[in-house]
Length: 242
Ligand SMILES: C[S@@+](CC[C@H](N)C(=O)[O-])C[C@H]1O[C@@H](n2cnc3c(N)ncnc32)[C@H](O)[C@@H]1O
Image (cartoon, rainbow, N blue to C red; front, top):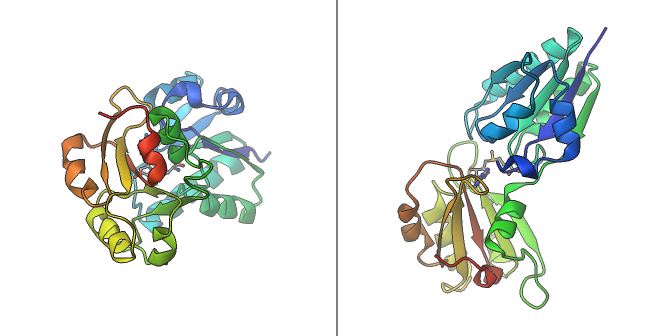
């Protein structure tokens, strides 16, 4: 009999930010395939006899590796197992959940998606920065600063520079280029910005700056954890200003 697959968002790391539904399903899984971005404590929700498979590089996974993950999920599910594919944040926000979903649909494997708290929302909550705020920011843009060739993707920079809050995923390697593009497109150099590493985990750290100097400031973060960059006037409303 065919099993079932679940694409589950594990949130930013703090296990208390897992949904009740995610925790319940993880606890029933026969097989859990997880990324490095999944908080270590989240994995303790799994059964002690569940098969735990780390399939993760943190970002920039090569497409053949993704194909291998798709195949693994299909194989276990078709063998009748309850398979959880656990991903940091939300599976459908820069999580390649769409590709896994398509692969499972094509294979005729029943699949369910459980959302998770994406990093941008966790950063807003942790720093007490409202991502939208009346009179300050009327839009939130989730963007990646990393394309398939390890470069900066092309965007309508003028549109991004016009205002609103920018939440930048995978933004550290190309941060200098990204901030330069926004400055060239007319965004104010004094626009508040922050980089937050390992948000909601015990080792969380952040540096505040401006659009003009954030690329220099991030060196102060040290560490090697995943880092989100938030740019926009709302950042000045943050309660934590270290
Ligand atoms: C491949 S994307 C995955 C995003 C994830 N699906 C989500 O919804 O948050 C990886 C990027 O997410 C961000 N990220 C994920 N977890 C994070 C954390 N705990 N702290 C800061 N940034 C994080 C970083 O920008 C990292 O480079």
